[in-house]
Structure formats: structure tokens, C-alpha cells
Length: 325
Length: 247
Image 1 (cartoon, each protein chain N blue to C red):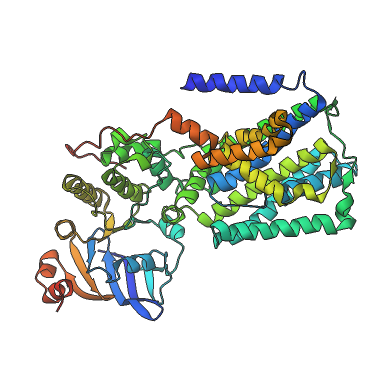
Image 2: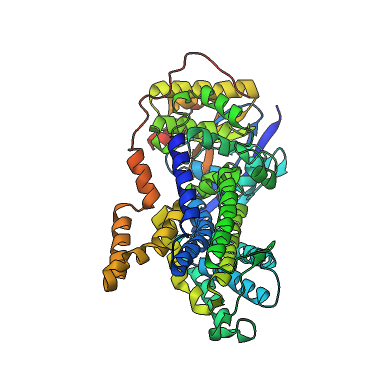
């Protein structure tokens, strides 16, 4: 099992490194977009998939990150400063957005986050003094790191891939730490979790804050990728798309967002051979998947790999006393 | 014997209907107190008020003399108070071992040290001892959701003891457990009580189980304590018989 996992991992990394060579700029752009959206989806997966807190505001945090990057880098600030600012801003706003989650769950919470998303969208559109409103911000530069210019699409793709690798590494550490276990407990049974000493209030807020901060990281990458941003890119549609990525890939599975983002970003392009029908085909495939496998692609893979079985034998009967400390 | 839990004049009303009506009692260090009563007598509501799941309408709860009324359940747990619930409350997607580690991890260091420290919070050895103690070795790596009801019940109880609590409130630990496993559970509880001087309050409908396990019993009916005493004293109490069988 471990060997198979290692082989798949090496093959995936090789594929990601080799993929942009031989592709046209649009193909490289799509790969970069996949990496950027995967970062945002990893954040949403922490909030929704692990901690069980629904959010329809992830696009807002991508937007906040993108506007932070656009405003700072067009004023001559380096991109790393935008990363720091966006992470801090999104973390604080995500923390505050988490407060309603202490009282509300499910669709009630979804509507609260939707309201937040609407307010953020209105700020992007109407506060022209800051965001230039519907005219957007153009000329967003791509960074140069230690003499390495990422202006070319392939270079910027590798930059995005590097940030994705760092983000994924941090998220991997997080979900495998006691925090990840506490997030899972929060999702599965918050009342029992609290009775075991899990501070559900703090973990809920932290799940929102970290997930939102990763949305901000994604936005900081998105701005120099497209080099022009305007408010509609961060409207509800993107939040729903990110939700789709998490759910289609498999909410609560670490690699779910990678797969979900590939489905959402790349599949429609692959279906273009069907010309006018490609979006209909895409929608039909997603509907079929959700109908037959609501736990997503990785949930389906796990079901196929491990058919539902019960342990063959129960606990042994008491034969001798044993102690514990 | 020192008093570990004090309950004074506890009341809980739901829309004018009193579920718990001025209940007062003490629990002493190292005792196993049974709390029995007919269905709807207010036992679980009383537990939930003591443990911060419900805010009492009146009254006071103290642990080691310290007021803890309406304290958050997670803070109470950190004071050394554990509990189980009437219905099974394990985490089905986590393995048996992970369930146990989770049950103890919040007592290890600070939140930040847990993020940066070991994945098992240094609890694998303790979890393994608990797994052996509750005879769950063969299912230690199985997801809790794949266990039988009886195994999940044992795990549920084991989780309550993982952090080494001094006081544990067990809500119907025997319900749905087969007789063989029930004897096992009773021996486990007695073992913990004797070796660690842990104090239990046990709600139970299984009279044979509660009479053989507890050192003192309180009987609740219509939200009030109607009898108190040793298992033999309670067994012969006319008020108790009337409460169970009706007038």
C-alpha cells in the first residue's frame, strides 16, 4: 500500500513538473489556475471538509488577497509583502466570520457567510477610491525572486506550483497534528468533543481563520496570474465553484481539493471537443458523480479499495486484570 | 472523605415545566454513586446541568468547593471531570486509537505546542494501555464506526477515562451491552475506582448492574430526590417501589 502510494506521488509530481513543457500559453495558464484554485480549495477543505463549517465566502478571501496583491505590487511593494498582508488580513476577517458559526450551523451559517460575501463584493465594486470599482486594476506585475523572473507563463506556473507545495505541506502538517484530529471531532460531534476538553469555540474560529488565510494566499497568486482583476471574478460563482471543487474531490480528504480543482478547471477545457455541448456534459458528469458518490472522487476510490466490512472478531473476553496509568 | 462534587438547589425548567426541582446532593472522593429513577425523572437533565451542557434555572454546582455552574464543558473536563452520554458518542471516522488519543490530547500542553509537537501528543502508550484494559486490542486500528455496538460502548467509556479524570459521570453505560460485556465493563469500572480512587456518578436503568456496582444510590422522581442510601436500603424503600410501579 505504501509502495503504491509512493509510486502515485512520484508520478503525480513528475507529471506536474513536465506538464507545462510543450503546452501553449493558454494550457500553461490553465495549469497555473489549477494550482491557484487548489490553494483556495485546500483552505475551504480545512474549514468545511475537516472542521465541518460551511462557508460561501471563500471567493471573498481570494478577492481580498488579489486586491491586496494588486494594490501593493502596483505601488512597487514586493509580492512577499502582499502575502504577509493578505494572510494577516484574511486571518483576522476569517476569525471574525467564524463567530456566527459558534451559534449557527448548516444552511443558517451558509447564509451568514453569503451575506459577508455580498458585502465584500459590494466593497470591491463600489469603493472606487480603493479598488477602482468595475474598471478594475490592471498591470499587476509578476514577481522576480532572487533574480528569477516569473514573467513567462512557465516560470509563473512553477512559482505557483512552489507556493502550492508549501501550502500543501503546511496543511498536511496541520491535519495530521492534534489540531486536525480536533477539527475532525468538531465536524463529527462537537458536543462530545467539548466533553473531552476540546475548546470547540477556539477550534471553530481557527478553522475559519486558517481556511480564509489560504483563500488570501490563493488571491495573491491569482492577481499576477491574470494581471487584471475586477470585482465579478470574486462573486458568488467562484465561491460555489470552490465548494464544488472540495465536494467533487472529496471533502475531508487531503487530496480532494487537488482532484476537485482539476475537475473544475481542466475538465471543461477537455470537454471542448464537444463544442457547444461542453458545459452541458460537464454539468451532467458532476450531477452523476454527486448522485452516485456524494463523498466525492476520493470517497469513491476509498469505497472501491475498502469495501464496507466489520471486524471479524470482537474484543476478547476478560481473562485477567490489567492496569493502566 | 472529601467532597468532590456539591450540587445545591439545582433547578431546570423547560417552558414552565420543571425537569429538575431543587436537587441537592454531595459526591465524595472515591465513591460510586448511582442515580436511578423512572424515565422522565430528570436524571439526564440533571447531568447536563452539572456538566454545563444546559444552563440551570437556579442552583449551584461546585467541584472541590469551586463554583462551576454553567462552566463550559471543555473547561470542566480540564478540571478533571469526564462523562459519557446516554447515546453512543464516539467519532466514527477516527480509529479506536485515534478516538482515545483525541480524548486525552487537550490535556497535553498548550494549543500551540500541540500544533507543533508530536502527532500523537505523546499519548500512544497511554492509549494502548487503555485499549488493553478495555479489551479492544483486536479492533485498535479499526474505524470506530465499524465496531459493534458493545465495542463502541466500551470505547465510549474508555474515552471518558483517557485524561485520567477524578470524577466521571456515566449516563446509562450498560444500555445495549450484552451480559458478558456488561460483567467486563463492571470489572473495568471497579478496577479504575480502586486503583485510581476515581469517583463515579452512574445513571442506570439496569438495576442488577447499578446495585452491584454502586456504594450509594440516589433515587430521582419528577425532578426530586425521593430516596437515598445503600443499595439494600433503596431496594426496600416503599417510596422507590411506588415511583417505579405507580401508586
